[in-house]
Image (cartoon, rainbow, N blue to C red; front, side):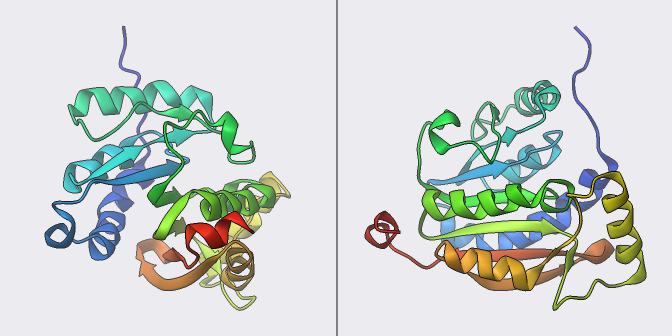
Length: 219
């Protein structure tokens, strides 16, 4: 059997900067005795999840992917890594009801979403926040990464050109505005607690669950 692993140069470039953010919010010394669980929505090739899991041994990662053809790649990265804190990937459409996701649990300390919002319909972003509102534990985090608009503006020029190219490929794609995302998050019991500037004009947004379970049950 041939090598099924896919390789995305952009994932290779940004894996360390994103890991630094994860380590900032989940420092080893504070969490080394914990047993945290992360659900990654849109795991891509699988390069990220094994890289993060190696440096965050106190966290078990559940990768998932909408593009079925990517699942063999994710599985091979996981198997070849030899890591015991990465589960086999699930086929998940973020717009499907949670009971169709085949999750082994429905409570996560972290939900991670990298480079999905701008290359998917707005419906996917709405559903991501809705599902995060239901699946995150008390004080759990949703961490999203990618290029964004802010206060109605896109900058620098390279991001404007990128946004135009995305919309030319699919009118449902494009950079999402952080202000609009905040409104969506707030409706689902999440608040923006951090904006981290990243290389190549990207940002990492950190969203915190501000509701306890009883408050979520009545939403």
